[in-house]
Length: 283
Image (tube, rainbow, N blue to C red; front, side, top):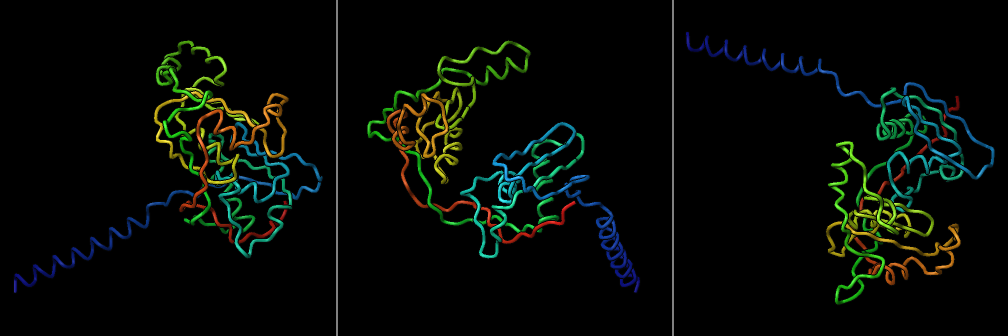
């Protein structure tokens, strides 16, 4: 009988501990959902062509004359070709224009403001979107020549960007950029130009997605830092006179100047599917 009574007391104690642990877990607050402290949304009917998204000190975000589609693109850090509207998405998300003035915490960073914008789109525009993997047309960037020789505007960099970063952290002077290679230890893009210095080709591949309108994967097998300078004529030329004088298409310029080529393929990639949205109540 004593053993049975002792076992019952142990069982009762175990049940009490389980219930107590559940109660304590319920008292732990869940992480706060990042939202703006205040936000004003108004329809923009000016008819202006210009649009902007400005992140300012003090946790401020000012969006002027933007479509919902473009706000989604910024909030989720995607390109247009990565976004797929579903059958129930209204056409106005890419035609109506909106102005938003929002204020987050003073210390909010740029990425944090974009998460707040995601939640604002959900709360005020009733946005429903999801990530999924689909097989899509892509480009594979490969070496064009069978002997592996690269083009005249692509070569291995002699710049030690780790040393440059260490010097900057120590407060030392930064070396001047190499002539004709663009910014030191970085990538700069403009209409019809890409300049790269002392960084991996992956930086170049990321920029190609926006220029080609497709996902681009790096299949060159080239590792290490490179210097690169590419010039071509965009489909809708808006660049300087030297860009327009070049006359080469992007595909031709990549082959002739870099010794690389884009091969059309299909591959599974992650996309953002937009399922639905509603016009907000203005304030």
